[in-house]
Image 1 (cartoon, rainbow, N blue to C red):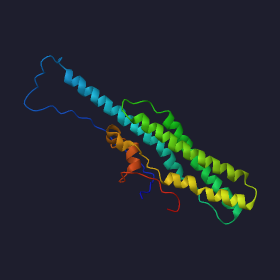
Image 2: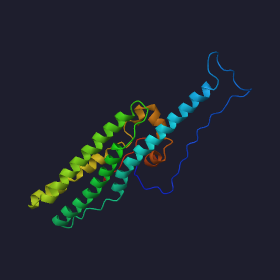
Image 3: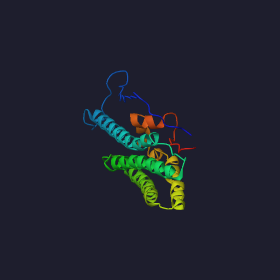
Image 4: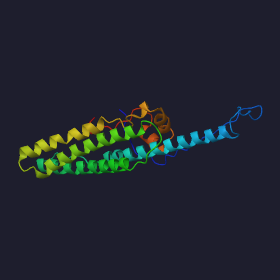
Length: 206
């Protein structure tokens, strides 16, 4: 499974080049306004740029969770009390990353690509659901008084972590050709994917 690491200095430049055919200027089709093809090409290029920008913003949102996972503290199992305390600290970091991911996904601008908004809605449902489960476990940790309750809460920490480990960070992109192509040009998406076509986050201990 691909393991994500912070990559420093990654920079990708999208170059859109329209190459004219050889042998002189093409003859406009009858009835086509002069410059009509250029206008169409410019519009296509603008739409591609918009899709790349949207994909980059989407992947930037998901990167908030990836970063939080890389910053998770280890669980100290030296005593039940320390296990509970450090499990709570770990979940606080994860919930913070999920908060930022959800906030940024909610603020994404619309893009004229069929299927993009559906990808965003499904991502919000997925990340929001994991966040709520993590918050519930964090609440259980905070109110656990007996040793048994504390052990149960610590054991439940694994559940949202496994959910995160099973995520495909670009879920839905392959079903939308424009987004699949755009993700290949978006720096934030290229950081996520690396050499893995279905990027995932390893959960601790995997």
